[in-house]
Length: 345
Image (tube, rainbow, N blue to C red; front, side, top):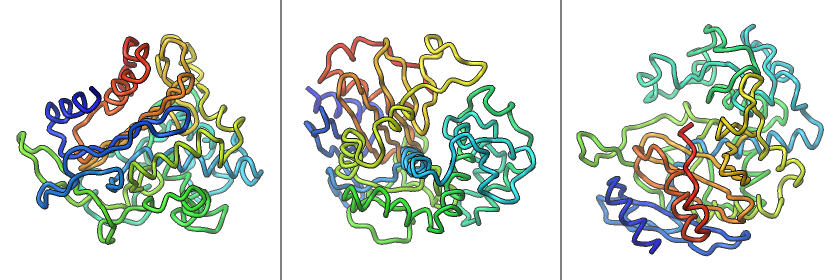
């Protein structure tokens, strides 16, 4: 039945390839690829197919940030300007916690009017930040919540400054190597990556190859590639509290509503720290979508039900990969199928 559902949704949405994992109590009960990782060469998708995972990578950035909080190297409620020099005056009071919970008020560089004109250019990090550095805050820090890539870009720079390591090396040392995530790394299209999937778009309802999208515009806001087999290892590390204390994970997976949006029952979802906390009829559920040219992804952790669904696909028009994840979870826990889907972020 799950195979039928997945194939039907792939047909409806014209998805070339999709890899899925379902875990129950930390152990995979489904680990499979569907369709094609590369249409031109008729290469099948599998659990080892490597996709761009986009903003799911924010969970990696948040995890390493919280590692430094645990070690006392940084403080969650301190301004990020304590660790980074020459930030715009308007950003000086923004705290690390406000960035992690998308409450910084800093405009997202991906919303800049000329953003899509520069995505094919390999720019410096200062050039990326310059897209929004002269703009006012969208709101006072902590007052509201608005999805923000700029803050996560700043976290990457902060992590490099505090540790003296490159962001990619830091992720490898702190997360990927300890968990055995050998197919997970920072993306660059020029690199030869075994099992790399092609990425696709729909142009006038016709499947086409995605255009070049510079890794300079993703970085610590979602610049990784991974396979579903590796993402299973990531989930097992979360489930077993391998990398962080359980108390730290509990803080990350708790709702952190903004000052003017603290009615959790009405919000239906609110930012945790690096994760979105979803209000499924009182159940503890956290997750994150990812979307980038040519690819879409999702991880949803139904914590109370001890079920996690992860999906990676090579088409970028999947606006609600979390909706697909919820439907798949419903086959393993029927009560989840009856619950309404929270509104899009």
